[in-house]
Length: 258
Image: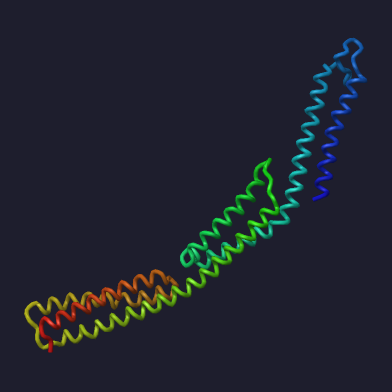
């Protein structure tokens, strides 16, 4: 960092030196015919124009010096925080890979806000006159990494909880379906079969067939770790089976099943 400052100051000194040398040259080489002109390369040049050219050259040199110095300083500063920024980005990607958007929506939202704040600070260096505070970037990167790690941990906990809830929901749905299946078999074996019984029984069995067909799909979705969807579907199946069970019980009472 010190080298960059020294080099920038040296370039600035050269730019100032150009101005001083040009001014000194213009004083010593005034045209014999016109005091407002300067002898330069065998030509008489207006003194003010000569100094203007010298000033333009000095400014151009100073601008290039500033660009080089700024780039040098930023390159050295970037080395201080680049690793921490990349680490924070990896932590955020790990949180997404853990499906934090599903199992830890609030922590991952906070982590995204912190990551965006870090990237916004880093982006300040993309403009020519912009500058990046290494200390500020390091602070933001540390916070972004911390919240991303927290989001990942929360996602793992949330995923395990969702897995357990889904497993319980599947078992509960299967129990309800099997209970309805057994009762439906009893209804089918009833001795009393009044008019319309066959039609009603067919409708009930059709509903049951649909429920039984859905159970393997629950196991497949559980294996794919789609726990949120599994629980929702299992709860729906359980409710349908419960309604079916009630209909079967009502039918048995209606026909006085023996």
